[in-house]
Each structure stands twice: as C-alpha cells, then as structure tokens.
Image 1: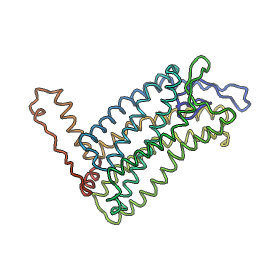
Image 2: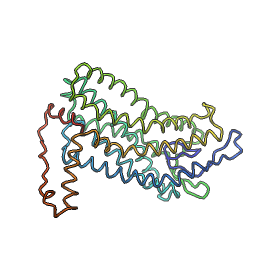
Image 3: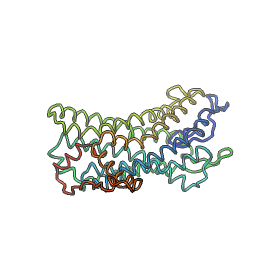
Image 4: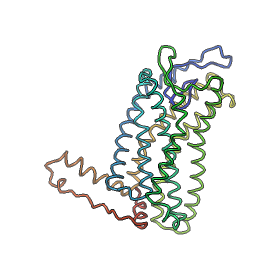
Length: 358
C-alpha cells in the first residue's frame, strides 16, 4: 500500500524521496508523508471496526439463517470473507503508516499477499455474482441446472486459486529494508528490471481489477436490461438490483485509485514526471486509496438498504442475541421467536429468495 515515489503499488507509504528530471535535486513530498502518518491510522481503524462488524453479521446471516441454499449465497459468503481478509490486515498497515515496519520480513510478505488476495478476490466474486444474475435472467432454463450450490463451491475454489496466483507477486517481491532511519515493507524487483516489473504489475492490477470487470458488467447488464424490458417481471427486477448496486459501488470506490496508480506508473509517458506533478499524483493515490478502503464496509450497508430479507434476518438476529441481553426484564423481547428457516431448496424457492435481495 505504498505510494512513495519509488513504490506506488498498493502499499503503506514510506518516508522516501524522489528526484526531479535532472535526477540530482531531491523532491521532498511532505504533504504525502504527513497525510499518511496523520490520517491513515485513524481511517484504517474505522474501516477495521465497521468492516469487521458488518461482514461478520453477513457471515452469520448467510450461514445461520440463509443456510447457503443457492449459488448466490455461496458467492456472497466468499465476498464477505474477501472483505474480512482485507480488513484484518489493516491494523498492521495502520501501525506502519504512523511508525515503521516492526513485524519482520515473513509478516511483510504474508500481509502483502493477504492484502492483494482481498483486493483481487473481492473483484472476482463480484464478477461471479454478475454472471450469476446474467444466467438467472437471460438464460433461465440453463440456469436451473448450472446455478447449484455444488457448482457455486467449485467455481469459488477455482477463483481462490486464481486469486492466489494473482497475489503471488505481492508476496514474492515484498520485503523489509532499512531506508534512512526506519524499516519499510515494500516491493523490491529484480535488479535491472524494476521499471518493467512495476509497469507489468500495475497493468495486471488494472486489467484484472477494472477493465475486464467493466467489459463483463457492460455485456451482462446490457443483456439483462434487454430481457427485463421484454418480460417486465417485477420479481426479476428485484433479483438483479442488489448485484447491480454492488457492482456499481465497487467501481465508484476503486476506479479512481486504479486510474491514479496507472497514471503514476506511466507518468513519464504522460510528461508528468516533474516534482510537482509526481507529488500531486502521490497525494491523489493516497486520497483515492483511503476512499477505496471503505469499500469493504459498504457491502453490508448495501444489503441492509437493498436486501429486504437481509433486513428481516438482521432484525431477528438483533432481537435474539442483542436486545434480549440488554433488556432481560422485557417480556416482549423474551417472547420473540424467529421464523423457521425453510431448508427445502427448489429452483422456484431460490428465485423467490434472490428476488428479495440476499
């Protein structure tokens, strides 16, 4: 998560210098370092709290109440796990932003890999959710056979394997190094190929995390909208609403960061490699990444506002596990009973379940 002059790719900022065009005058970027040390630790702490609570509630509802009865449930479960992976690495990066890296080389590699795994897996499972909606609406007959829990588990395992491969460079190249008076955790590419590796990995991040998902989203939702306009089924409208909102919100939060990092990496080609422009790009990376961090807290909020059944399950959960203990002497709360969960799964019940949004 570094956005220093030498290491811009998704790392905690380090106190380093870049050089102006003549490569002799140090370019000190105090605004970037000040932003990192003052604002990132409390911001990461907020994301940790809300992301941990929100996604833990999603896991509880999916496992205890939904019972993972459909392919959509499986993908939503994995999306919550992905967000939790992302969130659980934040305390280490928060300390690093305020001080220095004190957790050793092994933790530097592991946590960098976990960070990337959270980033890529989140995008991959949003893509799967989009394709799942596409099959359910556009190819409804084929979806009856393809959209099963078994296939959902298999595709999830494959996606985690792809995520591991996509995250390997972050794990392999990251290591600790003494820079000035502090230890840093940043990528160190093979000597002589630093620029090539850096550009390749940034292009990979943008292709996998922005451009391919955007193409898939446009294709799937164009076909979905066309089908919905033809059949005008309100239940199917509800079925696509939740996933569409999740996809759009992802792009709103992550696209600015991806674009900023891309511009920073290729700033020489864009004639922006002077000290002022480079500093502005680094600050843009810091701000856009700070915004992107909140994405892992947003999905539970989307479920709460868009998913009707999620709100019902959340209310039942709060009544059973929270309100009862806070108000033990309240007879009304003691008498609350949850509605029985229907375990029988059929394509028709699955469609009704999805149509309510989670």
